[in-house]
Length: 220
Image (tube, rainbow, N blue to C red; front, top):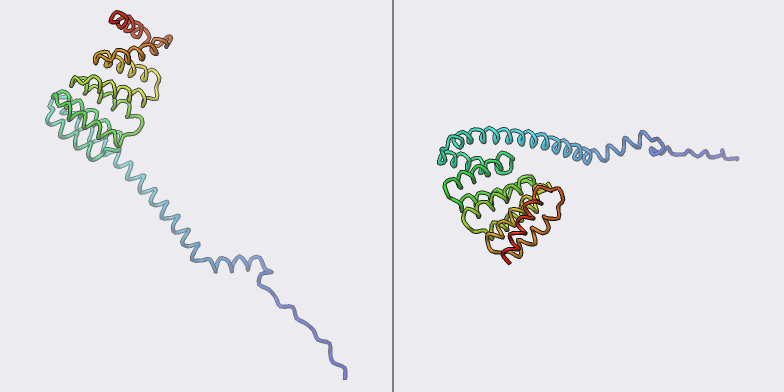
């Protein structure tokens, strides 16, 4: 008896359907995808909150600085000192906090509290942006000048010159450094600086540099 020929049935593979494959992949990876999407949402929300908080902090710092300037302008140094110290402590990382540190140092210098003024500026340096470093260093140098420590003043004028991104300002700080060195009796170091500044054709410091070199020549 002849047997009927067998008919083989080819199984249908779900992988043959690309849409079904994608659906299966999403089903398998549903949790990892949810985690990634959720994490991205959290990061986005955190950035938004941070920016809003930062903006709010800057606004509060600006308002606090504005209020602290009133007693300073009126010469009420004790009151100004307290107000400015509050701004520098609460908003040290903001531009208003940095400006408050500058004003605080001026208030302290006016009262001949040079060490306290220098300390306030050095504290501000720790959290200052690059745009404030040169000014802060030059004010520290000024404090040492008023104390009579001219060698230390020269050291900080050098730091101010190094921190300044502007060539004219950099040269002005170098001239201040050279003056402090001359006053401190460090004539050779001062001469080296003045000689370099005397080579700057057309720069405002060139004329003074030549005059100072003439003065140093007489002292030889």
